[in-house]
Length: 361
Image (cartoon, helix red, strand yellow):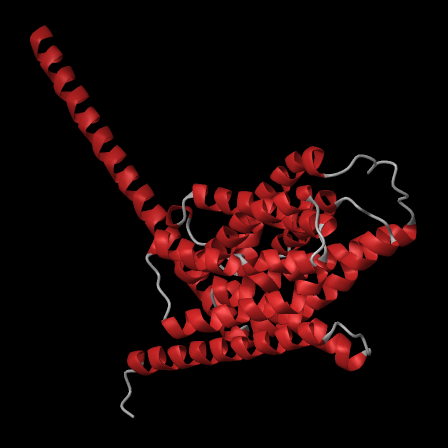
């Protein structure tokens, strides 16, 4: 009887253990199935959000939106740094991104933020790297603008274009046609001639401008590729990267901002001007992300140079300013190159659409 009881107990324990193992395997399979379905649902939702963004905000709408906001923030920052006297470029950039983070949190609280792709589709290192280069690109841009003239700042921006072309070729083996290279060269020469009369800088400002070129180019490349190839929308990508940007801007403040921010006169008028600039900064970041998602990094740089030329010619035609024949001629040359570059892009897009269209003509 003892032997029978021992054998029965051993078989019973083995049976229970096998059942527990089967239940564990079934539970793991159920968890894997649930995770797979969750990822598929998130992927479908993120792809739907991306398609909706592309449908509502195509290249023309995105570029126009970005152009108008960029013009507005020029006057906003000029008001803040000039009349208000808030000469703390890194802290101003920090206020811009903190305001953007708050507005994105409000959108998320009301379930108005687009769904982001599954975490496995995009490594966190990519999002962290994008947030890092955003901090350096935005912060160094405002610091360069503070220490250099507008003309030298625009001259530094010209170097971003070949940097993007070279970086995309080295990293992604992306090439552009000789006609586009020639058009970009004409644009760069035109902008250089248009701004050559305002080349005032100091050694510190020049060093900041040179350092700023690389993170600015990488920032535009990453924004464009993550949206076009990883199904990220502009707002979802901003929500994931802005905290990293805020963190590194805080770290940059002691190194690049002058002391005295606590002694600044924080009255109602000054705070209102800074908040208006911050709201425009959020719209600029959003519109820039939309433009990068709808076009390319190179096209976005060309848009920035187009903005410079339009401001110069608009001041001459509408307000009677006299930048000189040389500057006006350079602006006209740059606009001609931009027109050719845009037409080449439209032609290339039409050719791709014609090749992918399954319907017979």
